[in-house]
Length: 406
Image 1 (cartoon, rainbow, N blue to C red):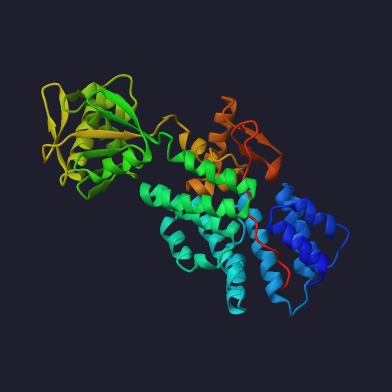
Image 2 (cartoon, rainbow, N blue to C red):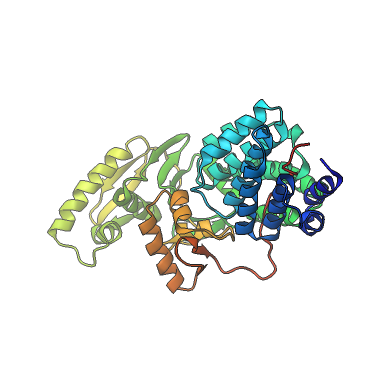
């Protein structure tokens, strides 16, 4: 590695893309192209960055498999930051395997972190943890250590493990200060704010209050019968019944739980479950069938009993019944929740993250855009969606140390 390449690589490691470009902007050799690509990515020109990294991968010779693998890792990172979730993950897996086989454990670990970050975005927590199990945190440079700890914290947050999330974020903050890169510090600060922001609402006995993450963790660990309207299940003392694929049954259960310890009239249940403004004999017959199905689903936790006025929920154990609801409820809340990270998403990437069809997501985006809750830019396949940004709030981009051979 010549002195200019080494100096440019050091500048990138410090988060100084302009300093790197000052040294290699006029060079077209493979190592310089790779460094220019990383620099352009740090400056936000992701399309130019991808083009430069692809040129660099082609320019590296057949005997430079490690360098080409590093280019693939950098391109995968750009795809992740630009929310291109359809990027071929097999290429990243092969690059990680090449780096591990050739002894580049640091960049191989970074590739595994990228895999885990993508899996976290699409909600595959178990597989994300398996990817992280292959990463030795002691090998990581400070910038990569931040990325690693943010993934660990993200998994802990989604599993309501507040203590583990705070510990991971504390380690991430320490690594970010050590790296001394402002975007990393801002990213950690943003992640910390999640722990102090209401994540749900508790509805019980006609009253409602907001809950922090640690409040939700305590609630789920208690012996209270929780009707979770965020993930559509009923839970008590380690027993859980999922109704995620039974929306009508869950609508009935939620109405009964919100009215507990009272009952709900049959007309109100028809309106809640079937969205009918008027009740006729067909609705009442269907209600009897659905209440019977709900009774069968809940037999481990509670009974669904008929009253003179309607139906009521009766837990087997004399405990409170509460509803855990999202902080904001509207038709397309899931789309807005994904876009809340401030990044620009394509409709296809949103479909992957939400496990829905692209057409369904596009209809949702058109609806919330009409309400001025999201904005888009670009055309065709280049069209991206995001929530209106907060002035001065930086976006995040975790980029690795230099790509060319040592």
